[in-house]
Image (cartoon, rainbow, N blue to C red; front, side, top):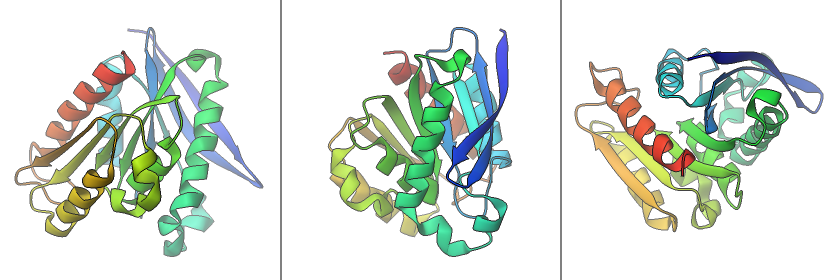
Length: 212
């Protein structure tokens, strides 16, 4: 399978965000990754998931939601509307690329990035699916009932407080939705086999909804 690789530079006001766009030939859509606190486009967990999605014939964009200076201020990772706007800028930058023109969009969010993904997806017909891994969808607040993209929430079975937050957010979602709890997984899905289960669930969700 031939894959087009683009080192993407995403204009964000006075800043430029760096991203890695990978689009296999014949891909129906591109999944944009919104990382969580203390992470970046180099996150090994997100790169593991992205590689698996590419192997399943889906495009991916790993990019930095924050500049290095912005990331030093931990308060920025909880500025959900700000992060959501960055995600929309990345979506627009992807769709301007020849290799991704006309493709639909999916969002894969982790931690606070999941809230940003849901806020960015709310009312956006271009976004066809959202997956949250160990996310904080509760931080999307009033945007949750306005999300129309099918949404999958994945939580570790040993991540007690986050399970409750995801259950509360799940009740507010009015779209097609699913909540999956992975037994034996902690917040970061570091236990053997748990991240592979995330991969399986994500490939199934994106594969069905981006190809619909």
